Amino acid sequence: MDSNTTSTIAGVSPRGTGLLKHAIARSRRMAWMAIVVADIGLLAWAAMAAFAPERLIGPGSVPILPAGYEGFTGAPWEALATVAPKATEFATLLFRMYGLYGVAFSLLAIAIATNAFRHGERWAWWALLVGNTITYVGAMAYDQTVRAIGPFELTEYLGLAAVYGALAITAPFHMPGSEGSARSMNGGD
Image (tube, rainbow, N blue to C red):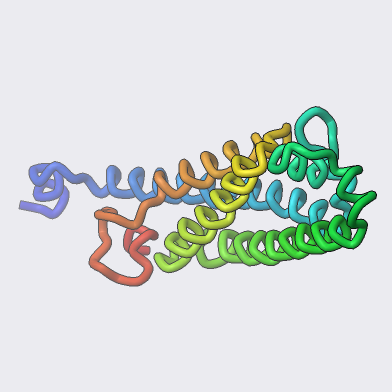
């Protein structure tokens, strides 16, 4: 028997393997782009939190810091500013630092997605899963705790869903042609 007959009998044709590799490559390309878009959105939010928190709108078109403080304490932000102006400055400083951490994570995640993840590095898949989960879930937990869910906060749920969807279609488990190599997300290429 020739090799084409053997492949057809085994249920795998050389052409089918090429289609599968093409589909995997297309899925990976869509996945890294989805992750980059989600993390660019996170970068934009984090940059606003770091550099202009007073312009970052929360629920009811109220800036996020007063909205969070009022949601958490039930007291008006203005009262805190009157009684303890340094406390509002300190809260703003903390929020700015939180934003800087978000900027740092987003830049790193974008770099990982556009390089190592795009090329099928298994560690990058795990890094994006863990990093995005911690970052997005941390932001969501803050929003829930201070009862400040506004339009930007809802995008966190969309961003995490996009990341999880992208990671689901590129999961490095049991990929055809993977033999436990570090690059098994590539399907063996």
